[in-house]
Amino acid sequence: MPRGRALVTLRDAAEYITKLPKAEHDAPEWQAAMEALLLVAESGGPTMFARIGVMRALNRQVERVFIPERKETHWGKRKLARDQ
Image (tube, rainbow, N blue to C red):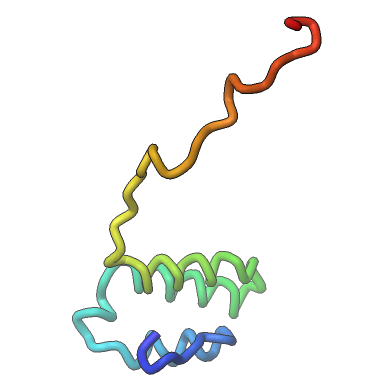
């Protein structure tokens, strides 16, 4: 968030979205985040939907890359008692 702000409540998220520039406001990620916020606010839906929508919209510029060397897998390292 700009200037170290944090979105704590659903109202904070809604105010942040409404203050976005028109071009950014019309992005599909922000539209989905607004729909999720409305679902939670009006219908009492799960708040996790709103959180996921806003987080995806905030991080839309970040490219997710899978790096297989980052973590070793545990598959095949376990020895069973019957195999010893």
